[in-house]
Amino acid sequence: MSELFSDIPKIPYEGPKSDNPLAFKRYDPDRKVGNTTMREHLRFSMAFWHSLTGAGRDPFGDPTMRRPWDKATGLEAARMRMRGLFELTEKLSIPFFCFHDRDIAPEAATLRETNRNLDEIVALAKELMKGSPTRLLWGTANLFSNPRYMHGAATSPDALVFAHAAAQVKKALEVTKELGGQNYVFWGGREGYDTLLNTDMKLELDNLARFLHLAVAYAKEIGFTGQFLIEPKPKEPTKHQYDADAAACYAFLKEHDLASKFKLNIETNHATLAGHTIQHELCFARAHGVLGSVDANQGDELLGWDTDQFPTNLYTATFMMYEILKNGGLHSGGLNFDAKPRRGSWTERDLVVSHIVGMDTFARGLEVAHAMIADRALDRPMGERYGSWATGLGASIRSGSESLASLERCVLDSPDADLLSGRQEELEGIVNRYI
Ligand code: XUL
Ligand code: CO
Image (spheres, rainbow, N blue to C red):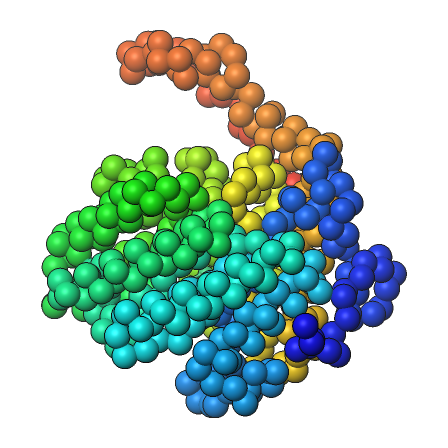
């Protein structure tokens, strides 16, 4: 089959000394870090909506990206994009991709016709997979672009809109299963509100839970065994999104008896919009056993919206890989580049270089995090800090053997405990030394 990106070669690993922008400096897929290859540690994924469908449009300007399918429309463009996806992931040694139903096939006048379009492109993807190592990390349904979803999908005030969203998820689950998807994502775009003056919050939250229970039931019915994921985001497009952050999602899942069925897909730029570091979000998810997958990108410190930039920050990538390694890996999840080249980076080469830089950033983060864990560089001071909980009184409190009265007896006549230092700068220096 003829190439669509004929100027882009298969990207080689050339090592840290290379100055070739079209080569990996750190990402060497078959190299082992610990007992696991970089490929399997990192489980990179290409986001169809950015890398294939994204055109560089912004609120002030028209598309800027030049792509091989620019002159094609409808299903023909969709077929070219799907071929482009397999070509780019293979050239970049990216093992996975992710998509929304509406990224890969055009919407038609009725859902029945739209589903026919989807079936055609899914059949093509299935065919292309036969000759390719590229696999599906997750599928999802776009429940936010069509005007019918202006007030939400599962949380719409209109039951017919809820029905439409349910029908869309039904089909998206079927095609995710058909393509061997390892996870299925719910990002609650527009599941929130702009004003409480017109919003029945309790009804909307209950409906969101009903919707997710329906999806779980249907997955069981069709034998889809992938992991369900919720992707937190605090705002944008609505002023307040119900899935605001990892803690809000976890509380919601617990309240509605869904916690055993869902994990979280944590996105870097969403964490920062929520006023958290990504390390905080990953750590919270890990602590509660719900760290499922990651949308790897970064925001801009000076901008208050979701800029979805390619991840290039070595510190952030190191802290992320630290949490992921502490989690025992991502299991069925991956590092999905929910990221787009800047509007001015409009060439095909920019698109490829963006992925290379993101992959090298995480490969380096993996190496640094792995070395810090192997040396117990942070675990040792952490163990010292919490040493009082390992034996004696701390162990007794943890085992539930103490009461307020027994604890009072311990301290009533004794001098204060020695003060501990937090040693923050020393620890930051340790991280710097490893980077
Ligand atoms: C939006 C976002 C989505 C989800 C999938 O901010 O991150 O692209 O990842 O719906
Ligand atoms: Co995302």
